[in-house]
Image (cartoon, rainbow, N blue to C red; front, side, top):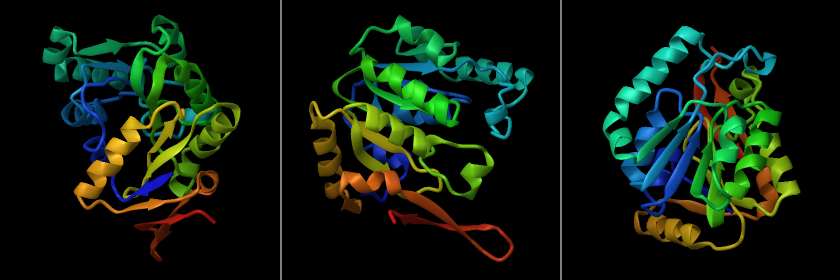
Amino acid sequence: MLYVNATRVEILSHLPKGMRVAEIGAQAGEYATNLLKHLEPRELHLIDPWTYHADEYYRHDPANVPQELQDRLYDHVRSRFADHIGTGRVKLHRAKSLEIVSHFPNDFFDMVYVDAMHYHDAVLNDLIAYAPKIRPGGILCGHDFCDHQLAAAMSFGVVSAVGTFIKRSAWDFAVISGKEDFPSYFLTDGRGEDWINHLVKSAFLNYVDCIELPNSLAPNFKAKLIVDADGKRWRLLPSFA
C-alpha cells in the first residue's frame, strides 16, 4: 500500500486516461469536473438521487441540503456538463446507487468512486454492490477515509465500512491520499496492477513523495486533526498506530 503525499485531485493526474468511470454522489459536480479534466474518461457516469435524506445518520452531513436545493444542484450539474451530456461522454443517473446498480453489467467500469452517504452501512453496501461492476484489475475508491473529530460530528463510518468490506472480499488497499483533511482510498482486486504501476511511475517522475506500508496497517489509519487552542483547524497528522 502506498501513502501518497497528494490530494485526491492530484492523484487523478497519475492514473491512466480513457477509462469508463462512475462517481457515486456527484452533488454539484466539483469532483466530476476534475475527473473529466485529469482522467479524460471515455465515459463518466454520475450517480446521485439529488434528494434530501431524513436518515438520522445523514442529518448532520452538510451535503444533505433541503429538496429545493437538491433540485437546483441537479439543474446545475445538467447545465455544467451539457456539452458532454450531448455527446454521450457524461451520463446522469438521478437515482439512488442501489436502485441503479442492476442497470450496469458486471465488469463494466474501470473505476468507481464512492462519495455518497457516509455512514457505515451505506458505504459498505455501495462497495459490495459496485465491486462486481468493475473489470478485473480496475479501481474501487472513495472519499472521506477518516474518523477525526470533524468526520465523527457528521457520523461518518467510512473507515470501518472499508475495513469490513476488505475482510469480506478479495479487494485490498493500494493507495491512500495524504495531503488533505478528508483523504481518499483506492483499492485493488489483485487481478492486475497496471494502474498502480502507472501511478507509481508518474508520481516518481513528478517528485511526489510516496511511502510504502504493509497493507495490514491500513485499517489502523487515523487522520488526526491537530487544532489550536481556539478549536480551529491547524494540520492533519497521519497515524497508523
